[in-house]
Image 1 (cartoon, rainbow, N blue to C red):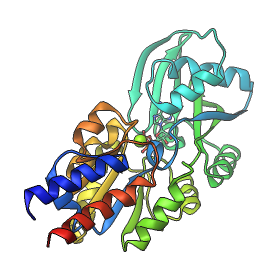
Image 2 (cartoon, rainbow, N blue to C red):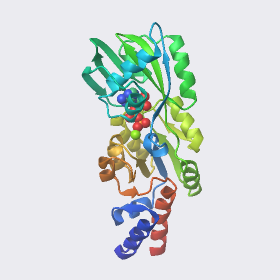
Image 3 (tube, rainbow, N blue to C red):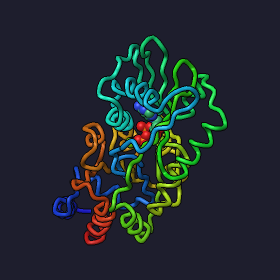
Image 4 (spheres, protein in one colour):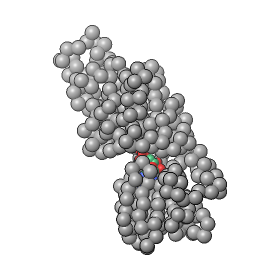
Length: 290
Ligand code: ADP
Ligand code: MG
């Protein structure tokens, strides 16, 4: 491919709302056969809202939410923002706050240990999660919601149901990718049931769920070792190493600085319909050149 023709491709991309960092990205996308999409903030809006709070045992839902919000006030996760926004205005301080990436967070509220995060986290912390709680969690997750549990002093206090809408452009973009002969995979730290529900909603046939932030790049490498040439689409800090590992990294425009820096291609509009455009653009450019 001649450099001049490749630069024409870069220019055409800009018109479509695709920022191509350099000719290398076009070259890389030529052989891509698999597109891995991050769930939160890429396939979904990434704007979480608190849909429901359930209390367990002797706790009230007001108290469960207050405890969760107190700890999440120190967290930067979109789930934390939803919980804080849904909680009371006046929150007690959380001491010894600790963020647990891909899991949740913990702190000490009014002298008692509070853990908030995915059910697995609480189980790992020795909190006993009984069948009643498990059933509630399973039914909310099957509907595509993300479920967060909060515990106080080792006892489950409540369940917070957080929702995130799928982007309106996602389903059509996935259909187009399949028409281009590309395989799609949904990659997420979220639980299997929620991930499957979102994947079904947008038509992605394969799901890699429960992947910790530190494991996302390894998940991309594993696909590459199976012989795939992988494009990774992501938005978050968590995705930066995976974007860099992929043969082609695409970041959505609203993504974090780090994700944008790690990507080869930036989708300028927050509209996934440009994703097949980005890949088609590269393939077309290179076909013209040959
Ligand atoms: P994703 O891959 O969807 O961007 P993350 O890897 O950031 O998700 O987080 C994975 C899961 O860990 C979330 O779905 C949630 O269950 C849990 N989690 C992470 N951070 C928090 C938090 N601050 N509060 C509650 N739950 C959290
Ligand atoms: Mg994310």
